[in-house]
Image (cartoon, rainbow over all chains, first blue to last red; front, side, top):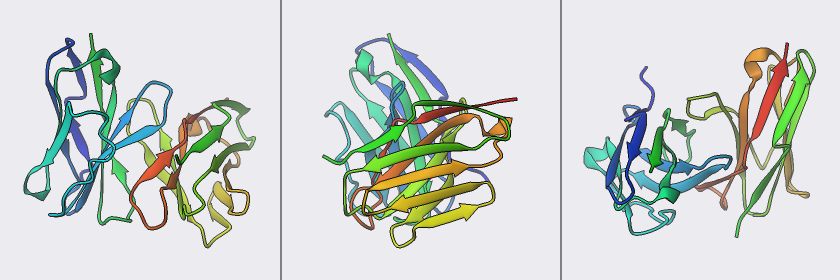
Length: 113
Length: 113
């Protein structure tokens, strides 16, 4: 079946602009995660959604970052007033339930000039 | 805070040889340890995982060992093949029964034909 999809695959923006990154999880998966992968680093947890529960936003690095998940499916990660240090690959993952295997999408490579 | 250290950062082996990647973790409550393989331009893919009630797990050419006392876990790949070339990440759950992982910084494995 279809895996996790993300769009766009690449995004180049100017410092100070807002960007939106989209994630389509695997159908039927109730849990959705966003991670950030900076060059040469491991994955950094950003935010977690589970069903209708309040999201765990504890990994968001600043209030410029926000995310929403509409209808328990598609999620959008928004970065406002982008900075050069926001340049990274943003990965989305989904899992059937909270403690199940996380399946990752291909990521969105964000470059802030 | 919680930490996962991964070594080596790069590893080159001849085709057919074995490869070993080691990780140490700091959170004694961690009870789930997945390993991910990331190929160029793709998201991480789970290749094997182990829970803290097991000392070793094997899946064909891949095995993972866990030493809870020393807080070490390792990935072993035998009879390496060129298609094993990728970046490998270890991770440890933050606490027990949680969806949050701390990732290592990755090991770039090159299998030389």
